[in-house]
Image (cartoon, rainbow, N blue to C red):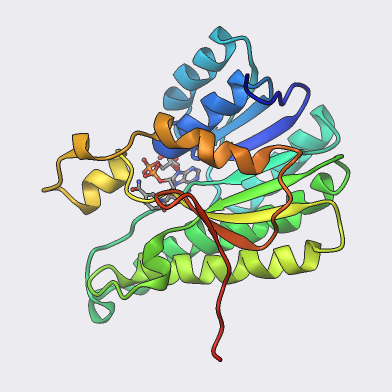
Length: 246
Ligand SMILES: NC(=O)c1ccc[n+]([C@@H]2O[C@H](COP(=O)([O-])OP(=O)(O)OC[C@H]3O[C@@H](n4cnc5c(N)ncnc54)[C@H](OP(=O)(O)O)[C@@H]3O)[C@@H](O)[C@H]2O)c1
């Protein structure tokens, strides 16, 4: 029997496909009201229809999280409709160019940082106060193993995830004395469009699907989850501590 999230309000960015879709469906099946966010409304609609079909409730909210005005409108919508937010899953991201640092244009660099780092900070700034009104608020940010590895030729994505890790750890430390719990999550190689674009020669059937890994991620959204400021590594099913210089 899955732990219920009945009555909880959950926001998932990048809910239209891939890992975000898997998480949104899982949250919906457990009874949460899922605010499903992505840019393309037409791809969000079938996800919302599936949530309703499995007995869940949902709000389709198409917006571009790289736009500060869009995030402020999202905050206003949540304030007006619900007055608080229980769960934030900041999952949407972009890969950016697969080139060396010397070849990336400033516009490409900024686009990756705006979507992968600045948007998460803006979600924290705009939605954090709404989360502190909830009984057991939980936030999960999707990062990547490449943030802590050398990734020559796709550096900007890796560097953005490394910066995201620092943003999230900072928020977790700031939230330590509250009832908010904040986690990073490395999903590991997963069968999605983004992965296929990065590794075109890989057999997608050798990878886990978003549906297979989403229960591991949704665990961190449950009221009973107590870890804060750590990285949950899905492939190893391990909670990792950050290690600074000795
Ligand atoms: N797949 C893997 O193997 C893997 C491994 C490590 C980490 N990750 C991380 O896991 C997360 C999900 O990855 P994925 O593979 O599921 O990606 P994906 O298949 O490319 O899906 C990305 C989702 O984000 C949305 N999105 C992108 N830019 C957006 C924006 N500016 N505003 C709103 N929504 C936006 C997309 O919808 P629209 O295009 O309609 O906006 C889509 O729903 C990412 O943070 C990724 O870095 C994935």
